[in-house]
Image (cartoon, rainbow, N blue to C red; front, side):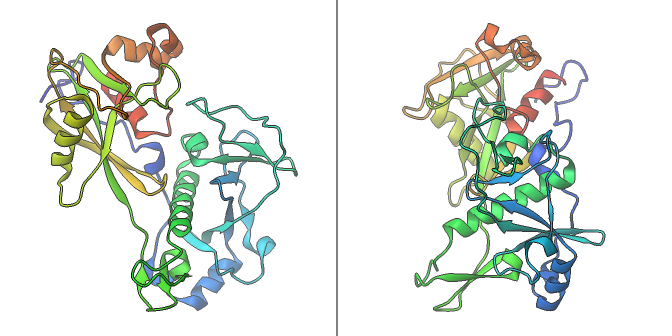
Amino acid sequence: MTADTRTGEPFRLAGPPALSRTTTVRDEIVRKDPARLDELWRGGKVLLLDRTGRTPVTGDATALALRHASAIQADRPAEASLLGEQGEVAYWSVPAAEPMRPDPVVPPNAWGLWPGAVSEAGEQWHDLRGIGALLNDTDAGLLTAAVALANWHARSRYCAKCAHPVTRTCAGWAAKCTGCDREEYPRTDPAVIVLIHDDEDEYVLLARQPIWPPDRYSVLAGFVEAGESLEACVEREMEEEVGAKVSDIRYLGSQPWPFPRSIMIAFAAQADRTADVHLAEGEIEDARWFTRAQVRTAFDGGGEGVGLILPGPTSIAHHMLRAWVGE
């Protein structure tokens, strides 16, 4: 295991990734108590979420623009999901269909994408990818949970056993089949994300997908297969994607990534920088070794000069690379 030359210790994430932050309490028992849920709704706050995953935010996009539940509906809606409680306040999410202005007037996110819009009422609506890192711990946790639940419900409308429609139960945290009474719960797909460095810990191997904007590079990732350990997945995926035989696999941290239902499990691993790189056809367009100085330059805003533009701060890849360069 290579030690960080500045501290003598292996590098670690500086703190929880953007979407791993949360402050609310989740209580499974409360979710099964209709009377208590009705009470929590009456005094609760609501996060609106449209079908594209956007939610209203404050003018500077650093806080959620929550509604009082009473302003939404007097009685608890069947489609309301309980996100959690904090102190005396319960937080909910509810699907919304807000008319938007046709012309975008908000800046793009760190990947050059356009996550936001402005409603006809003049309110900014953004998605989790675009503003997740800008929110405080409470709001980041609320929006992450809301998006995860919404994506699960959108893809799980029918029973996997008998194909009958399902209905929401447990305040949005379960679904029950209308045909065979089978209960289903939200699923999470584990994926590994790996920062590969050389044996001297001065180079990092980054790659890009064909669909990414020019000069966008990131660390490598792949889904865990059935019956596979996380470490075995790291070894297999890194060899499949770039031909790298890795060693010294070390856990760094994790982050939910509800697009639509993943959790990214971060590792560091070592590989031989002199070995040939073999790209996975159709998946990886390019992969190359970058120096610590090049990565730091990219973070400092000079990425175009070195042909390297890195993931935005919502991604755990951003935090992994920040930790590796010593920031």
